[in-house]
Length: 304
Image (cartoon, rainbow, N blue to C red; front, side, top):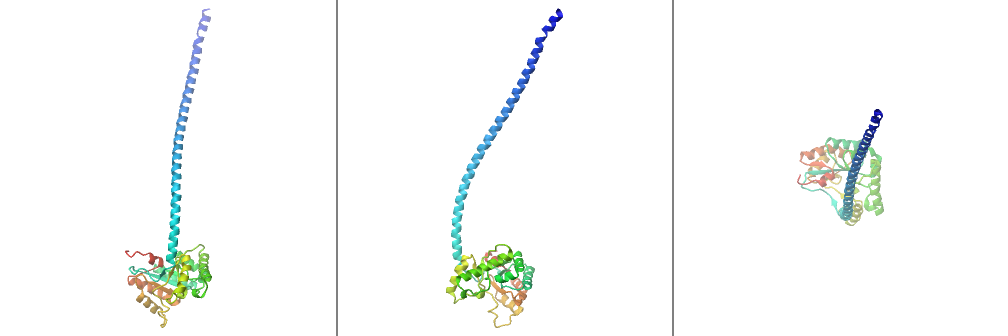
């Protein structure tokens, strides 16, 4: 009887322990849920803050975009104005030489030649570390595309000399434009990409002599439309030596006697002119003059 009573008196303690375990479990669950909820709340707050920051940044970007578009419109209008001024400048400017206060002399070579003589020319220029401006006929570029590709690859610049060396005063305006366009097409085909030049040289100086003012204005309008300057020269050989034997020695002497700071020297792709080229380049440097391309000449700073 006493044992039975003792056994029944222990049961409430077992229930209390079970309740305590359940309570602790529930407390732990509530704590975990609270921590999770707090972390979620903090994450939401962080995301909200980032969202607000992104919205502010988006507004700034939109404002900046509006400002950029306004700037674009202003620059576009300015560019149109500059292009118009530039066209007028190119349509009224004939360049015979550069600034006389610089020590540079532009080497320009006209027309075209066989691949062998062309590569010989490029070898001479490379040996003397000189960049030149070459004025090939488009038809010659078509004949020897690899040679002209080499010229451009080695840093020489090309100028438009028409496709067929046509005398421009003898053909109508549409034919003049065709000659210029066909030159561009021949060069583009040879190089594999569009090539833009700033320079045009009239074959035989036709249209740009002292007695051809009316024809000159008509031609310069067309040349200006193409974005080019007309390039003449102040040192040449054909007319200067027309009554003499144009040997390499005489050619060299004439160039060195007449070239000075800012000069533009006109040579042609002939055996004698190219044979004289090394002596011309060396002789210019011996006289304190630096042979160069037209771009280098025209952009040179007199103060350097």
